[in-house]
Length: 304
Image (cartoon, rainbow, N blue to C red; front, top):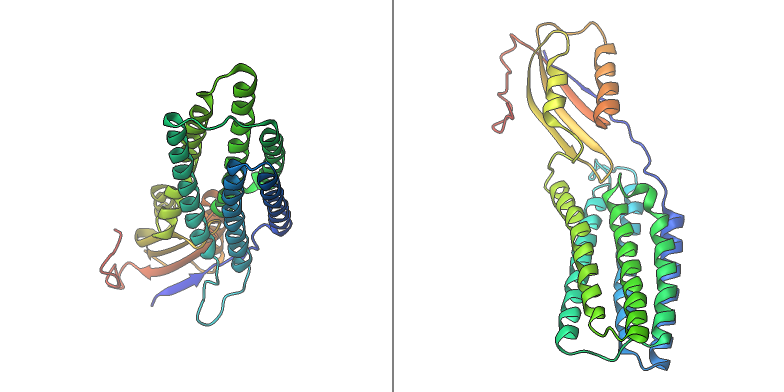
C-alpha cells in the first residue's frame, strides 16, 4: 500500500499594484513631456527616447498583468492557477531589454562614425528629469528584485532608463562645456554593456524557469540528502523540483520506507523543513514500503 501526502501552502505574493500603477503613470507622463519638448526643440533624440520609454511602459504593463494573474485562484482546468504567467513575463522583459541594448549599441556605433549635433541644454534638462523619475520608479521595485524575477525585470527596465538618461546628462555636459564630442557614443556603449550584463542573468534565469529547471538557490543534492537521512528511509527516487512561478517552488518525491510512520507528524515536519531550509512550499511526497515492489516502476525517467 502506498501513502501519498500533499502539503501545498498557497501564499499570496507581495502586492506591487501601487508600485506598478505609480510607475506606469510617471512614465507615461514623462513620455508625453519628451514628445512635447522633442517637437518644440525639433529633437529627434528626445522623440526616439520617448519611443524607448514607451516600450518600457509596455514591459511594466506586462509585469503588472502577470503579477495580477498570479493571484487568481486555481480552476478545474488550471490546477496550478496562473502563477507561471510571472515566468513568461520575466522572459519577455529580458527579451525587451536585450532589444533595447541592441538599439542603444547600434545608435552608439553610428554616432562614432557619424557624429551628430551635441545635446542642447533643453535635452539635458529633460534627461535629468528622466533620471529622477526612472530612479524613483526603480526604487519602487528594489525590495523584490532579489526574490522575484518578474519584479527584477521591472526594476531593470527602470534602472536601465535611469542609466541612459544619466548618460545623456553627463555626455551632454562634457560636450557642451569641454568639447568632448567623442564621449557621447562611448558612454552609450558602456551603458549598453552594463545593461547587457545585468539583463543576461535575468534572461538566463527566466529561460531556466521556463523549462522547469531547479530554481537558482535550491540545491537538489542537499534536498535529496536531507530526505534520504530521515528515519526509516531506505531510498529516494523520482525526485523532481520545479518552479510554479517566479517565487514558488514545488517538489515531488517517492520515499521508500522500511516502515511507515505512525502518523502525519513525520510528513508535517518534512514539509516544514523543506519550506524553511529550501523555500519549497509545495511538496508532494509518496511513501512506499521497501518490499512493495513499486521501486521506480512508475516512471521511465526516474531521476535515481
